View 1 (cartoon, rainbow, N blue to C red):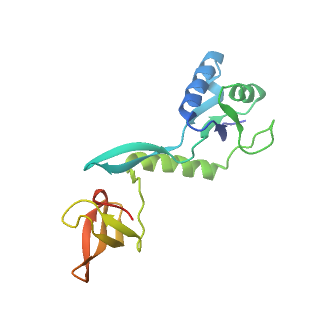
View 2 (cartoon, rainbow, N blue to C red):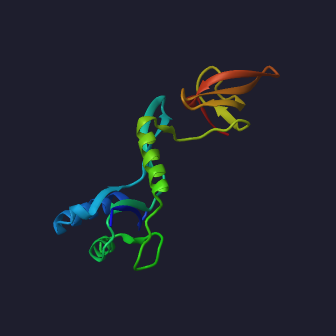
View 3 (tube, rainbow, N blue to C red):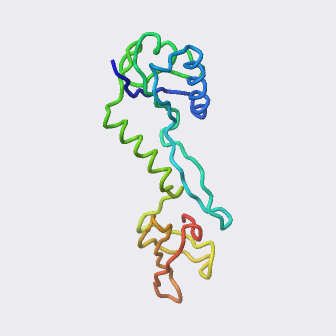
Length: 177
């Protein structure tokens, strides 16, 4: 049997600890050949705080850890015996089912994209009402017309002297509604 991707349900907030514990137990048991990579699916997000662009990591499947392994009784017991692991997702209690290869590839691609080009922490949609918090239009309310995630900018229609005026702003200059 080859290695397949499985999803482990872990206590939320303890995903990194579960990953470290798994790696340690695999090394101690000498079962490295039965296991592939173990990953906590995260992506990098960008947010503006105090005029500074800050990067942070966000889990896009909180409470879950992906593990590439060859399923045998020994590997199953090793994973199940790790503290803070509630079990496998899918299949039956004693025979977990691997996730489809296409789904595993999509998750791995999303992790890779999150590293290459971070996503904004707050997402905006056209038609949404926002408030300008920085720049010459501070304290004005406006409606989002266009969003450019590549450049972290948006076009907002602001009411100035009774006329709707399009203004080009950065994500850090506005807040939701």
